[in-house]
Image (cartoon, one colour):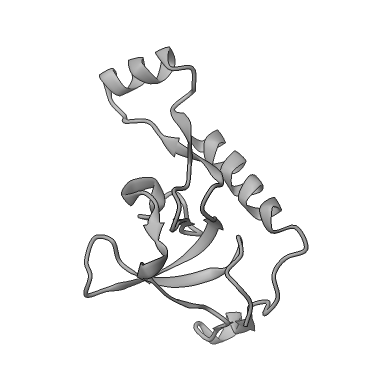
Length: 130
């Protein structure tokens, strides 16, 4: 097994309910800048425009934390709603998908050649949605 890298699918204790686990894609490690949505609504919209961004701001993932995103961003509850996740809440790395049987596959067991490329693509794509 390798160290965690952007693009890995991981399991973690849910930040909202410690009796449940979530399965999300790790997109950024500590020290990596990520796009965070600004508060919505009239005041949030006005502040967003005044602070120089179309609905998002950049923040750095804090030491000892990771940034997790769901693959279905439109309906996923992930780090965009609950913030950075402490390493201690991670419980595993997904190595195989078995359900549904038609989508059975192994996940790579080696880190990507450019571990930051995935995080850059996801951050840019996520920014465009806000």
